[in-house]
Amino acid sequence: MGETKQIKLTAEQLELASKLTPLQRKFVLELIKPGTSQRQAYLTAGGKGKTESAQDSSATTMFSNVKVKAFYDSLLSLIASDSIMTKQEALERLSKSARATIHDICTFKFTQVGEDENGNPVMQTVWEMKSTEEIDPVIAASIKSVTLTKAGPKIEMYDATGSIKILSDLQGWNAPKESKLTGDLTVNEVVRKVVD
Image 1 (spheres, helix red, strand yellow):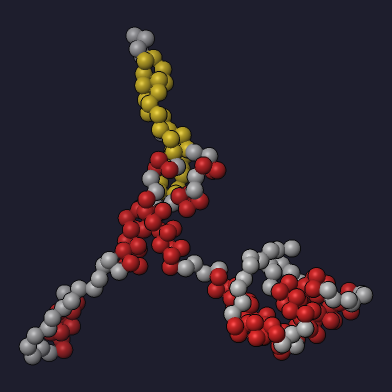
Image 2: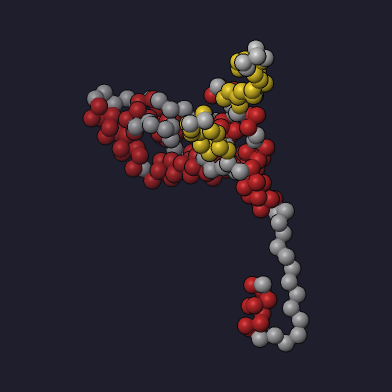
């Protein structure tokens, strides 16, 4: 059975809940949990139907009650709105993405990979991708692709500049430019000046 986070009821929702019996209120609160059937909600709320048929019938009758449905719909809309990313969440995620570098995904070290014909060490920069647990999920979402080439694996990240551009648009850093029109201009001249 899925779990729902603690929700704060509005004054309107409290009013709707006050018009229900304790069984009806508990039924609705159970029913909004993801993956819960009407029968499960009815039983968890304390419904007393003996057979599955009686339980289904009681749950259906309860759900068809206008007051129960109104309370259910109000909670459902609240849960749906909570699942939408807020502006603050978007700004934080875009900021992390804009700051992401290859060093958040890989480690680099200069190491000996062999010896030349004279016995001198051959040094090379070697990189290793971090484990999934070490990479922040937002940073992982900044990886555009990982491909295997003849020269070895190739990691491509999304352009941080794109995240910065979206951030600047959301923050209003790119304010619209003011255009001044003077004199007696025709409509076509105004359109040309605005387009230019």
